[in-house]
Length: 446
Image (cartoon, rainbow, N blue to C red; front, side, top):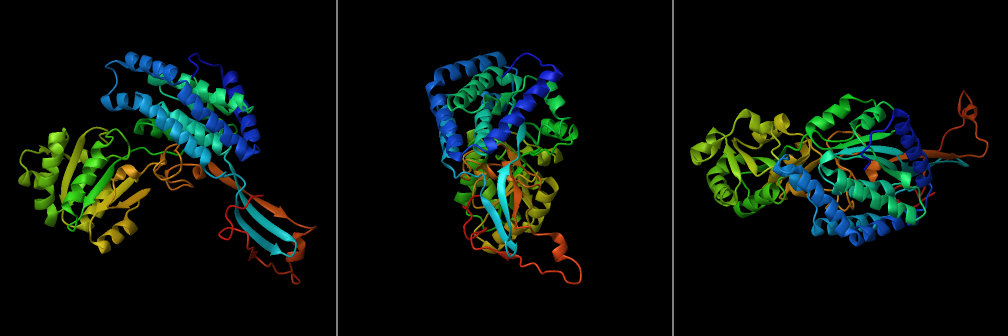
Protein backbone atom coordinates (compact mmCIF):
# COMPACT_ATOMS: atom_id res chain seq x y z
CA UNK A 1 0.00 0.00 0.00
CA UNK A 2 1.10 3.57 -0.50
CA UNK A 3 3.02 5.15 2.36
CA UNK A 4 2.86 8.78 1.20
CA UNK A 5 -0.11 10.97 2.03
CA UNK A 6 -2.26 12.07 -0.87
CA UNK A 7 -3.92 15.37 -1.57
CA UNK A 8 -7.74 15.56 -1.65
CA UNK A 9 -7.54 15.83 -5.44
CA UNK A 10 -5.43 12.67 -5.66
CA UNK A 11 -7.85 10.78 -3.43
CA UNK A 12 -10.76 11.93 -5.56
CA UNK A 13 -8.88 10.83 -8.67
CA UNK A 14 -8.37 7.37 -7.16
CA UNK A 15 -12.06 7.06 -6.36
CA UNK A 16 -13.06 8.19 -9.86
CA UNK A 17 -10.68 5.60 -11.32
CA UNK A 18 -12.27 2.96 -9.09
CA UNK A 19 -15.71 4.01 -10.33
CA UNK A 20 -14.62 3.67 -13.94
CA UNK A 21 -13.03 0.30 -13.22
CA UNK A 22 -16.20 -0.91 -11.50
CA UNK A 23 -18.24 -0.05 -14.58
CA UNK A 24 -15.93 -2.09 -16.74
CA UNK A 25 -15.85 -5.02 -14.33
CA UNK A 26 -19.65 -5.05 -14.19
CA UNK A 27 -19.74 -5.92 -17.90
CA UNK A 28 -16.67 -8.18 -17.96
CA UNK A 29 -17.57 -11.84 -18.60
CA UNK A 30 -17.44 -14.07 -15.56
CA UNK A 31 -14.84 -16.30 -17.19
CA UNK A 32 -12.41 -13.40 -17.33
CA UNK A 33 -13.04 -12.35 -13.75
CA UNK A 34 -12.44 -15.94 -12.63
CA UNK A 35 -9.27 -16.08 -14.75
CA UNK A 36 -7.87 -13.15 -12.76
CA UNK A 37 -8.49 -15.05 -9.55
CA UNK A 38 -6.80 -18.21 -10.78
CA UNK A 39 -3.82 -16.16 -11.86
CA UNK A 40 -3.79 -14.46 -8.46
CA UNK A 41 -3.75 -17.83 -6.69
CA UNK A 42 -0.77 -18.90 -8.77
CA UNK A 43 1.09 -15.66 -8.07
CA UNK A 44 0.54 -16.02 -4.33
CA UNK A 45 2.31 -19.35 -4.42
CA UNK A 46 5.00 -18.30 -6.88
CA UNK A 47 5.86 -15.17 -4.89
CA UNK A 48 5.55 -16.76 -1.44
CA UNK A 49 9.17 -16.08 -0.40
CA UNK A 50 8.88 -12.35 -1.11
CA UNK A 51 5.48 -12.12 0.57
CA UNK A 52 6.70 -13.90 3.69
CA UNK A 53 9.79 -11.69 3.80
CA UNK A 54 7.62 -8.55 3.72
CA UNK A 55 5.46 -9.96 6.49
CA UNK A 56 8.51 -10.88 8.58
CA UNK A 57 9.56 -7.21 8.44
CA UNK A 58 6.14 -6.16 9.76
CA UNK A 59 6.29 -8.70 12.57
CA UNK A 60 9.81 -7.62 13.51
CA UNK A 61 8.84 -3.94 13.46
CA UNK A 62 5.84 -4.64 15.68
CA UNK A 63 8.06 -6.21 18.33
CA UNK A 64 6.38 -6.24 21.72
CA UNK A 65 4.04 -3.37 20.88
CA UNK A 66 1.11 -5.50 19.72
CA UNK A 67 -1.18 -7.66 21.88
CA UNK A 68 -0.64 -11.36 21.31
CA UNK A 69 -4.01 -11.74 19.56
CA UNK A 70 -3.18 -8.94 17.12
CA UNK A 71 0.28 -10.35 16.48
CA UNK A 72 -1.26 -13.74 15.75
CA UNK A 73 -3.52 -12.16 13.12
CA UNK A 74 -0.57 -10.28 11.60
CA UNK A 75 1.73 -13.25 11.07
CA UNK A 76 1.81 -15.06 7.75
CA UNK A 77 3.44 -18.40 7.06
CA UNK A 78 3.49 -20.94 4.26
CA UNK A 79 0.33 -22.61 5.52
CA UNK A 80 -1.61 -19.34 5.64
CA UNK A 81 -0.48 -18.45 2.12
CA UNK A 82 -1.56 -21.86 0.86
CA UNK A 83 -4.96 -21.38 2.50
CA UNK A 84 -5.22 -17.93 0.92
CA UNK A 85 -4.53 -19.38 -2.53
CA UNK A 86 -7.03 -22.17 -1.89
CA UNK A 87 -9.65 -19.61 -0.91
CA UNK A 88 -9.04 -17.56 -4.04
CA UNK A 89 -9.46 -20.66 -6.22
CA UNK A 90 -12.64 -21.53 -4.35
CA UNK A 91 -14.06 -18.09 -5.16
CA UNK A 92 -13.01 -18.50 -8.80
CA UNK A 93 -14.89 -21.80 -8.97
CA UNK A 94 -18.15 -20.34 -7.68
CA UNK A 95 -20.91 -19.68 -10.24
CA UNK A 96 -20.84 -16.20 -11.73
CA UNK A 97 -23.16 -14.14 -9.51
CA UNK A 98 -23.76 -11.31 -11.99
CA UNK A 99 -26.82 -10.98 -14.23
CA UNK A 100 -28.55 -13.91 -12.57
CA UNK A 101 -32.31 -13.71 -12.89
CA UNK A 102 -33.96 -13.36 -9.49
CA UNK A 103 -37.49 -12.73 -10.74
CA UNK A 104 -39.23 -12.82 -14.09
CA UNK A 105 -42.85 -11.68 -14.25
CA UNK A 106 -45.28 -10.96 -17.05
CA UNK A 107 -47.13 -7.78 -16.14
CA UNK A 108 -49.28 -8.04 -19.24
CA UNK A 109 -49.08 -9.47 -22.72
CA UNK A 110 -45.76 -8.30 -24.17
CA UNK A 111 -44.75 -6.48 -20.96
CA UNK A 112 -42.12 -8.44 -19.01
CA UNK A 113 -40.30 -7.48 -15.81
CA UNK A 114 -37.00 -9.08 -14.84
CA UNK A 115 -34.90 -8.53 -11.72
CA UNK A 116 -31.20 -9.28 -12.18
CA UNK A 117 -28.18 -9.25 -9.87
CA UNK A 118 -25.62 -6.49 -10.33
CA UNK A 119 -22.55 -5.19 -8.42
CA UNK A 120 -22.80 -2.55 -5.72
CA UNK A 121 -20.05 -0.50 -7.41
CA UNK A 122 -17.18 0.85 -5.28
CA UNK A 123 -16.37 -0.56 -1.86
CA UNK A 124 -14.18 1.06 0.78
CA UNK A 125 -12.85 -1.60 3.14
CA UNK A 126 -10.88 -0.74 6.27
CA UNK A 127 -9.26 -3.63 8.11
CA UNK A 128 -6.75 -4.16 10.89
CA UNK A 129 -3.88 -6.57 11.50
CA UNK A 130 -4.80 -9.37 9.09
CA UNK A 131 -3.03 -9.14 5.72
CA UNK A 132 -4.90 -12.24 4.52
CA UNK A 133 -8.06 -10.12 4.67
CA UNK A 134 -6.72 -8.11 1.72
CA UNK A 135 -6.74 -11.20 -0.48
CA UNK A 136 -10.16 -12.40 0.69
CA UNK A 137 -11.71 -8.99 0.09
CA UNK A 138 -10.03 -8.51 -3.29
CA UNK A 139 -11.13 -11.96 -4.49
CA UNK A 140 -14.76 -11.39 -3.60
CA UNK A 141 -14.75 -7.88 -5.06
CA UNK A 142 -13.31 -9.12 -8.36
CA UNK A 143 -15.69 -12.07 -8.62
CA UNK A 144 -18.70 -9.85 -7.92
CA UNK A 145 -17.63 -7.16 -10.40
CA UNK A 146 -16.98 -4.47 -7.78
CA UNK A 147 -14.01 -2.16 -7.37
CA UNK A 148 -12.45 -1.80 -3.94
CA UNK A 149 -10.40 0.80 -2.08
CA UNK A 150 -8.44 -0.86 0.75
CA UNK A 151 -6.98 0.59 3.92
CA UNK A 152 -5.06 -1.85 6.09
CA UNK A 153 -3.47 -1.28 9.46
CA UNK A 154 -0.07 0.37 9.71
CA UNK A 155 1.28 -2.69 11.49
CA UNK A 156 0.82 -4.67 8.23
CA UNK A 157 1.93 -1.99 5.77
CA UNK A 158 4.69 -4.02 4.10
CA UNK A 159 2.60 -7.19 3.92
CA UNK A 160 -0.38 -5.35 2.48
CA UNK A 161 1.77 -3.51 -0.04
CA UNK A 162 3.27 -6.75 -1.31
CA UNK A 163 -0.11 -8.49 -1.52
CA UNK A 164 -1.74 -5.52 -3.22
CA UNK A 165 0.99 -5.54 -5.86
CA UNK A 166 0.27 -9.21 -6.56
CA UNK A 167 -3.47 -8.51 -7.00
CA UNK A 168 -2.80 -5.65 -9.39
CA UNK A 169 -0.29 -7.77 -11.28
CA UNK A 170 -2.95 -10.44 -11.80
CA UNK A 171 -5.38 -7.83 -13.12
CA UNK A 172 -2.80 -6.35 -15.49
CA UNK A 173 -1.75 -9.74 -16.83
CA UNK A 174 -5.37 -10.56 -17.61
CA UNK A 175 -5.92 -7.22 -19.36
CA UNK A 176 -8.30 -5.76 -16.78
CA UNK A 177 -7.96 -2.38 -15.01
CA UNK A 178 -5.49 -2.40 -12.13
CA UNK A 179 -7.50 0.38 -10.51
CA UNK A 180 -10.18 -2.16 -9.69
CA UNK A 181 -8.19 -2.77 -6.49
CA UNK A 182 -6.34 0.16 -4.91
CA UNK A 183 -4.69 0.87 -1.57
CA UNK A 184 -5.43 3.94 0.54
CA UNK A 185 -2.38 5.40 2.27
CA UNK A 186 -3.76 6.68 5.57
CA UNK A 187 -6.75 7.49 7.74
CA UNK A 188 -7.03 10.93 6.18
CA UNK A 189 -7.76 9.32 2.81
CA UNK A 190 -10.47 7.18 4.39
CA UNK A 191 -11.93 10.22 6.16
CA UNK A 192 -12.10 12.09 2.86
CA UNK A 193 -13.87 9.22 1.11
CA UNK A 194 -16.40 8.87 3.92
CA UNK A 195 -17.75 12.25 2.84
CA UNK A 196 -18.25 11.14 -0.77
CA UNK A 197 -21.36 8.95 -1.10
CA UNK A 198 -21.23 9.81 -4.80
CA UNK A 199 -17.93 7.92 -5.12
CA UNK A 200 -18.25 5.10 -2.56
CA UNK A 201 -21.26 2.79 -2.32
CA UNK A 202 -20.49 0.70 0.78
CA UNK A 203 -18.02 0.93 3.67
CA UNK A 204 -16.89 -2.32 5.28
CA UNK A 205 -14.83 -2.19 8.49
CA UNK A 206 -13.01 -5.28 9.74
CA UNK A 207 -11.42 -4.65 13.09
CA UNK A 208 -12.03 -3.41 16.58
CA UNK A 209 -15.27 -2.15 18.05
CA UNK A 210 -13.76 1.34 18.13
CA UNK A 211 -12.97 1.20 14.40
CA UNK A 212 -16.48 0.10 13.44
CA UNK A 213 -18.25 2.65 15.63
CA UNK A 214 -16.01 5.49 14.45
CA UNK A 215 -16.72 4.76 10.79
CA UNK A 216 -20.44 4.43 11.39
CA UNK A 217 -20.48 7.81 13.10
CA UNK A 218 -18.45 9.54 10.39
CA UNK A 219 -20.39 8.84 7.20
CA UNK A 220 -23.78 8.76 5.47
CA UNK A 221 -22.55 5.87 3.31
CA UNK A 222 -23.98 2.50 4.41
CA UNK A 223 -21.58 0.68 6.75
CA UNK A 224 -21.55 -3.12 6.92
CA UNK A 225 -19.77 -4.64 9.88
CA UNK A 226 -19.85 -5.86 13.44
CA UNK A 227 -18.70 -4.00 16.51
CA UNK A 228 -18.33 -7.01 18.82
CA UNK A 229 -17.94 -10.76 18.64
CA UNK A 230 -19.37 -11.78 22.00
CA UNK A 231 -20.40 -15.36 21.27
CA UNK A 232 -22.12 -17.69 23.72
CA UNK A 233 -22.49 -21.43 24.13
CA UNK A 234 -25.42 -22.59 26.21
CA UNK A 235 -24.96 -26.07 27.68
CA UNK A 236 -28.49 -27.30 28.24
CA UNK A 237 -29.58 -29.83 30.87
CA UNK A 238 -29.62 -32.47 28.14
CA UNK A 239 -26.13 -31.67 26.82
CA UNK A 240 -23.84 -34.64 26.25
CA UNK A 241 -20.81 -34.13 28.48
CA UNK A 242 -18.12 -35.26 26.04
CA UNK A 243 -19.66 -33.27 23.19
CA UNK A 244 -20.06 -30.14 25.31
CA UNK A 245 -16.45 -30.20 26.47
CA UNK A 246 -15.12 -30.86 22.97
CA UNK A 247 -17.18 -28.07 21.40
CA UNK A 248 -16.29 -25.50 24.07
CA UNK A 249 -12.63 -26.42 23.65
CA UNK A 250 -12.85 -26.01 19.87
CA UNK A 251 -14.80 -22.77 20.06
CA UNK A 252 -12.35 -21.25 22.55
CA UNK A 253 -8.96 -22.65 21.61
CA UNK A 254 -9.00 -23.50 17.90
CA UNK A 255 -8.28 -19.80 17.24
CA UNK A 256 -8.89 -17.63 20.33
CA UNK A 257 -8.29 -14.35 18.48
CA UNK A 258 -11.16 -14.92 16.03
CA UNK A 259 -14.37 -12.94 16.36
CA UNK A 260 -16.36 -16.20 16.29
CA UNK A 261 -14.52 -17.71 19.27
CA UNK A 262 -16.77 -18.35 22.26
CA UNK A 263 -16.40 -15.86 25.12
CA UNK A 264 -19.12 -16.95 27.58
CA UNK A 265 -20.43 -20.42 28.40
CA UNK A 266 -23.85 -20.64 30.05
CA UNK A 267 -24.62 -23.86 31.94
CA UNK A 268 -28.06 -25.13 32.95
CA UNK A 269 -28.23 -25.42 36.73
CA UNK A 270 -29.38 -29.05 36.63
CA UNK A 271 -26.31 -30.04 34.59
CA UNK A 272 -23.75 -27.82 36.30
CA UNK A 273 -22.44 -30.44 38.72
CA UNK A 274 -21.79 -32.73 35.77
CA UNK A 275 -20.56 -30.25 33.14
CA UNK A 276 -18.60 -27.61 35.02
CA UNK A 277 -15.96 -29.93 36.55
CA UNK A 278 -15.48 -31.58 33.15
CA UNK A 279 -14.91 -28.18 31.52
CA UNK A 280 -12.44 -27.10 34.19
CA UNK A 281 -10.53 -30.39 34.00
CA UNK A 282 -10.21 -30.06 30.23
CA UNK A 283 -9.55 -26.34 29.76
CA UNK A 284 -7.48 -25.30 32.78
CA UNK A 285 -4.51 -27.58 31.90
CA UNK A 286 -4.61 -26.12 28.39
CA UNK A 287 -3.92 -22.65 29.74
CA UNK A 288 -7.41 -21.19 29.58
CA UNK A 289 -8.13 -18.57 32.22
CA UNK A 290 -11.57 -19.45 33.59
CA UNK A 291 -13.73 -16.84 35.28
CA UNK A 292 -16.88 -18.04 37.01
CA UNK A 293 -20.01 -16.58 38.57
CA UNK A 294 -20.68 -17.10 42.27
CA UNK A 295 -22.60 -20.34 41.64
CA UNK A 296 -19.73 -21.65 39.53
CA UNK A 297 -17.22 -20.85 42.26
CA UNK A 298 -19.28 -22.78 44.80
CA UNK A 299 -18.74 -25.87 42.65
CA UNK A 300 -15.18 -24.99 41.62
CA UNK A 301 -13.61 -22.70 44.25
CA UNK A 302 -10.36 -22.34 42.28
CA UNK A 303 -12.09 -20.36 39.54
CA UNK A 304 -11.34 -16.66 39.23
CA UNK A 305 -14.31 -14.41 39.97
CA UNK A 306 -16.30 -13.18 36.99
CA UNK A 307 -17.54 -9.59 37.19
CA UNK A 308 -20.41 -7.95 35.33
CA UNK A 309 -17.88 -6.58 32.84
CA UNK A 310 -16.94 -10.10 31.80
CA UNK A 311 -20.38 -10.72 30.30
CA UNK A 312 -19.77 -7.85 27.85
CA UNK A 313 -16.14 -8.58 27.00
CA UNK A 314 -14.71 -9.97 23.78
CA UNK A 315 -11.43 -11.42 25.04
CA UNK A 316 -9.84 -12.54 21.76
CA UNK A 317 -7.58 -14.64 23.99
CA UNK A 318 -7.70 -17.92 25.97
CA UNK A 319 -10.01 -16.47 28.60
CA UNK A 320 -13.52 -17.83 29.18
CA UNK A 321 -16.41 -16.59 31.31
CA UNK A 322 -18.66 -19.23 32.90
CA UNK A 323 -22.16 -18.70 34.28
CA UNK A 324 -24.74 -21.08 35.71
CA UNK A 325 -28.28 -20.16 34.64
CA UNK A 326 -31.58 -21.47 35.95
CA UNK A 327 -32.93 -22.75 32.64
CA UNK A 328 -33.31 -22.05 28.91
CA UNK A 329 -35.35 -18.90 29.62
CA UNK A 330 -32.50 -17.49 31.69
CA UNK A 331 -29.97 -18.37 29.00
CA UNK A 332 -32.06 -16.62 26.35
CA UNK A 333 -32.40 -13.56 28.60
CA UNK A 334 -28.63 -13.42 29.18
CA UNK A 335 -27.93 -13.64 25.44
CA UNK A 336 -30.47 -10.90 24.71
CA UNK A 337 -28.81 -8.67 27.32
CA UNK A 338 -25.17 -9.35 26.47
CA UNK A 339 -24.93 -10.91 23.01
CA UNK A 340 -23.55 -8.93 20.09
CA UNK A 341 -25.68 -10.62 17.42
CA UNK A 342 -22.71 -12.53 16.01
CA UNK A 343 -23.01 -16.28 16.73
CA UNK A 344 -24.76 -18.22 19.49
CA UNK A 345 -24.89 -21.99 20.07
CA UNK A 346 -26.85 -24.48 22.13
CA UNK A 347 -25.49 -27.89 23.06
CA UNK A 348 -28.30 -30.32 23.84
CA UNK A 349 -29.93 -33.63 22.95
CA UNK A 350 -33.34 -32.10 23.68
CA UNK A 351 -34.70 -31.20 20.25
CA UNK A 352 -37.54 -29.11 21.69
CA UNK A 353 -35.04 -26.94 23.56
CA UNK A 354 -32.85 -26.71 20.45
CA UNK A 355 -35.80 -25.72 18.26
CA UNK A 356 -36.79 -22.99 20.66
CA UNK A 357 -33.22 -21.67 20.88
CA UNK A 358 -32.90 -21.60 17.09
CA UNK A 359 -36.21 -19.79 16.75
CA UNK A 360 -35.79 -17.21 19.50
CA UNK A 361 -32.14 -16.17 19.43
CA UNK A 362 -31.66 -13.08 17.26
CA UNK A 363 -28.14 -13.39 15.87
CA UNK A 364 -26.46 -13.70 12.51
CA UNK A 365 -25.61 -17.32 13.31
CA UNK A 366 -27.54 -19.65 15.62
CA UNK A 367 -26.13 -23.17 15.96
CA UNK A 368 -27.13 -26.49 17.51
CA UNK A 369 -24.44 -28.94 18.61
CA UNK A 370 -21.72 -27.20 16.62
CA UNK A 371 -18.78 -24.92 17.35
CA UNK A 372 -19.23 -21.17 16.92
CA UNK A 373 -16.02 -21.27 14.86
CA UNK A 374 -18.05 -22.48 11.88
CA UNK A 375 -19.33 -18.91 11.41
CA UNK A 376 -17.00 -18.19 8.50
CA UNK A 377 -17.44 -17.48 4.80
CA UNK A 378 -15.00 -20.16 3.65
CA UNK A 379 -16.61 -22.80 5.88
CA UNK A 380 -20.06 -21.77 4.63
CA UNK A 381 -18.92 -22.39 1.07
CA UNK A 382 -18.73 -18.72 0.11
CA UNK A 383 -15.07 -19.09 -0.88
CA UNK A 384 -14.14 -16.24 1.47
CA UNK A 385 -15.74 -13.32 3.26
CA UNK A 386 -15.29 -9.57 3.33
CA UNK A 387 -16.38 -9.55 6.95
CA UNK A 388 -19.15 -10.44 9.37
CA UNK A 389 -22.32 -8.38 9.48
CA UNK A 390 -24.36 -8.37 12.68
CA UNK A 391 -26.85 -5.77 11.46
CA UNK A 392 -30.15 -6.40 9.74
CA UNK A 393 -29.46 -4.90 6.34
CA UNK A 394 -29.28 -6.87 3.10
CA UNK A 395 -26.31 -8.98 4.27
CA UNK A 396 -25.96 -10.74 7.62
CA UNK A 397 -23.34 -13.10 9.04
CA UNK A 398 -20.29 -13.94 6.91
CA UNK A 399 -20.58 -11.70 3.86
CA UNK A 400 -19.65 -13.42 0.62
CA UNK A 401 -20.58 -12.65 -2.95
CA UNK A 402 -24.29 -12.16 -2.34
CA UNK A 403 -23.60 -9.44 0.20
CA UNK A 404 -21.70 -7.46 -2.44
CA UNK A 405 -24.57 -7.48 -4.92
CA UNK A 406 -27.60 -5.36 -5.54
CA UNK A 407 -30.15 -5.79 -8.30
CA UNK A 408 -31.81 -3.94 -11.17
CA UNK A 409 -35.29 -4.20 -12.65
CA UNK A 410 -35.43 -4.57 -16.41
CA UNK A 411 -38.77 -3.91 -18.11
CA UNK A 412 -39.31 -4.95 -21.73
CA UNK A 413 -42.44 -3.67 -23.44
CA UNK A 414 -43.96 -3.01 -26.83
CA UNK A 415 -45.20 0.57 -26.57
CA UNK A 416 -47.05 -0.04 -23.29
CA UNK A 417 -48.45 3.08 -21.59
CA UNK A 418 -49.50 3.49 -17.96
CA UNK A 419 -52.61 5.42 -19.02
CA UNK A 420 -54.03 2.19 -20.43
CA UNK A 421 -53.99 0.71 -16.90
CA UNK A 422 -55.74 3.64 -15.16
CA UNK A 423 -59.27 4.99 -15.02
CA UNK A 424 -62.71 3.40 -15.39
CA UNK A 425 -61.68 1.34 -18.43
CA UNK A 426 -58.31 0.30 -16.95
CA UNK A 427 -56.72 -2.74 -18.51
CA UNK A 428 -55.97 -5.34 -15.79
CA UNK A 429 -52.43 -6.50 -15.04
CA UNK A 430 -51.67 -10.22 -15.36
CA UNK A 431 -48.81 -10.34 -12.79
CA UNK A 432 -47.91 -13.89 -13.80
CA UNK A 433 -44.55 -15.32 -12.75
CA UNK A 434 -42.86 -16.99 -15.70
CA UNK A 435 -41.54 -20.54 -15.64
CA UNK A 436 -37.90 -19.49 -16.01
CA UNK A 437 -38.04 -17.01 -13.15
CA UNK A 438 -36.73 -17.42 -9.61
CA UNK A 439 -37.10 -20.94 -8.30
CA UNK A 440 -37.71 -22.60 -11.66
CA UNK A 441 -34.33 -21.68 -13.09
CA UNK A 442 -32.38 -19.41 -10.72
CA UNK A 443 -29.20 -19.74 -12.80
CA UNK A 444 -30.73 -18.17 -15.89
CA UNK A 445 -29.15 -14.91 -17.00
CA UNK A 446 -29.93 -11.94 -19.15
